[in-house]
Image 1 (cartoon, rainbow, N blue to C red):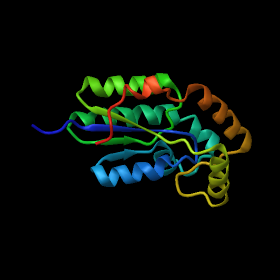
Image 2: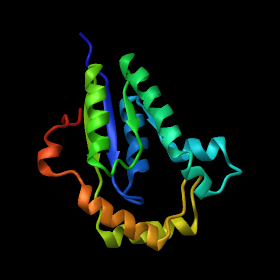
Image 3: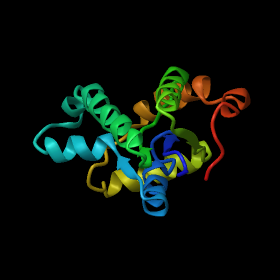
Length: 162
């Protein structure tokens, strides 16, 4: 009997290393990597970041439908999203398990100082598909994530890495 497919969820703030890790998981586990920022930029290079953000929910819905289909076919998937809210993490874990997939949460939590340094470097030379992160935007994200980060009891709900 073959192993169940694995859904890898990346969880962390901008600059935490989610996409770097997602690319490693993609290679190591033969997974389909779904990164909303890259798809949005690829489909709409003419739009400003604020306009692209208006399309994010629809893009993530499309990527999630794709993820469920791929998982149901027995293939691994990496969702390269932030997943800052518990409700999101619960939803994706529950729906993936309903089709027999294992779910691994990859929590990335560099210090605030390290995140700010990484974001400054990234903003200075934005890679393809990346969005500029302003200081106010970062502070709002930092405060939100501090309140909604996965707790030890929540982390126990996920499967160990393969």
